[in-house]
Image (cartoon, rainbow, N blue to C red; front, side):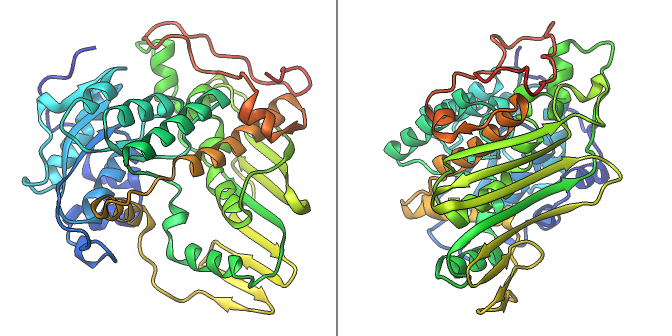
Length: 434
């Protein structure tokens, strides 16, 4: 598809946009007055950070505002999305809220279609935000690194082992090219998480024996199919509910909690076993994903991680991580505290991690020591993918086998609007492990 032409100011409303993004950083970024108050934002000079946004939905647009608020010398220069209405909505919001000297996106640097990511990477941007549905992430990351761009990429970063290996290769390429990569696992940039994790690693709870992590909540948005939408368009617009696009909610959402578990323990699991199902969200509009999972991961030294996630209305909710040690327990969410011999309650600064992750990346770029979180987030993403694979098939498996041997590739063979049959819902005991 060709790049879009004229853009109008009839896109999403300000109220709808704020509701869609829903972060404290967004409200601050609207005025762009908070950047000088962020720790480290002034460091490293004012070399221009020219941002191209790939994926202009709520998270991509919100991440652009977070980036603008994160440091001085940041400007928007390009935007691309599969759908014109998404790009138009994002550009309209930028025009409304971003000062003219920072808003440099034009019709010529605004792109639509499956190849929009390539066109953004061909502009003079030097920092790209990757926020299209996760299934596209490996391809988009490869293009960005090959084009010499620093990258902020949303989590998760793949939906299958083939995509995982691609992300690892691209991350290694970025290291060779001295390019930065930071991922949207914002807990790694959140003050209370950083402090509690430091104390855990310094021995405050003794030796870790187990981790319990949860993301149990109600349902999310869903888009019914419209008559004018092809299969491909509907699936891309309703991307949460198709494994090839989201990885299922254990990958798309619960990866945050699994990343915290890996951060605490270090390394990756040796094996895992899990279960899950599709008990409530059974209508066609919910695609082919499950609505609940429970996975057990076995790490070296007999450390076990118990993981549960659920998206079912009317049930109790819980989003948290609990680290159990021989001398105490750490609770990461809800402010952060340690119970036991070295009891502690975090009461320090609470900066916005959605903005701080950009601050950290930009500061590292300007210092000439770019952060590279590529393999870190890839391993956490694969931990979630492996959990899904175990639940879908009913099989226990070696994590190393998933890393190095599995040939599972769930992406379509071609990207074009038209027919795209929905893959059947997995049936444990019947679905094969590939």
